Length: 456
Image 1: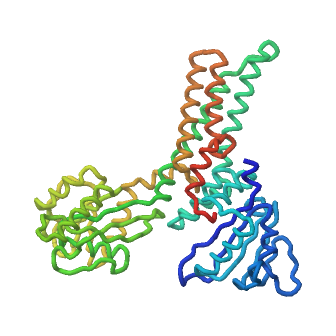
Image 2: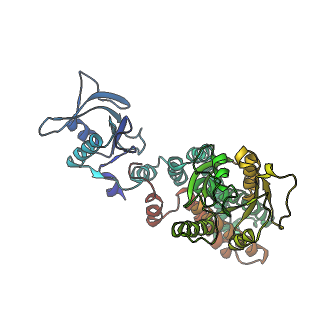
Image 3: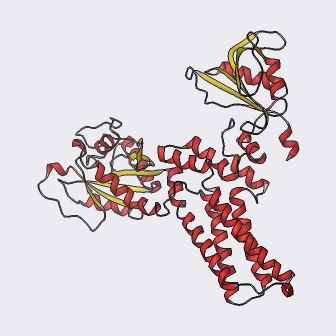
């Protein structure tokens, strides 16, 4: 790993969109970052090259002295930088051409194009971030709601790592006590098994509490896919438009207006939601409509939640029953739409929950959102009362730690020798260490950081 960290890497650190964005940043990190910057950058006047100072000048081709861009240069010398190496950033004009030319010059001067997540990997390897904080960086970049961003920020501030380290420290203390009795049994008093059992029970309970945040974390990171399905002309598109407060879908009195899946992205209770308005499901003769109906069925099959929408004026029909049979294996909310057009609620099958809406009048949307949150049990996901949440990798490691802790307690209960205690205690310590990075393999690091963007 040491040789890997000595070379200088470079990458574009901002999203580059043609004809958009006022600033594009090229970032370098490593031992040659400053010398490359001095070769390429000409500061105006007598500006001082010192750490955490912004210089103004031009980026020039070192051979031809042609000006490539008018730019700012930011110096962050080790160890006061993101990677704890010398870091240089060229703040160029946005778009594509300027930043790509500056990056190419950096590569020609000896820098290497960074791998995905390599800047953050170096921050981890150099001790600036632990593994939970590094993963939170990626979560913060990819956050799709304010709550997701706040959860990621809490992880970046070390709020997840702190309790994990405390749990691991307790397990290490117990292991030290047990191993001391194995090595110096005659010189030490007997172990207080009741006290150790109590400590293990407390650790296990805290692990359970942290595991409660896994589902919430998954929802915040990946969001919820919701499909609006039903017969033609029951108000599915009106429901999407009312919900998204836009005219995403075309609405007409004619059945079969929607021919393809229309998507909208919303935030409900802090959870990113991808809403799919589907074509009305029926036996269509038109080839284009047939394709739309088939895509509707596929969307319903892949959705996390199905909003089965029916017309309150028509009530529950045979066609509704057929659609219900196709999606009954998915979580369902029955949406009784156009309730403003009827005096009494029609007879409905025993499907819960049922939400009444008048989408054309923008009524019932709040009730629908509450039903969705209840369906995915958001309230129970807040049971741990924590502002951070674990991801799948961390949950898997915690589950292994929990299993090992339970096995230690069973070993104590069955009065097995102390050597058996140490086996499962070490397994728990190993699993907890994998979360923060005290115990981690290179293959795990590759898997984690390969998901990052190149410039982070």
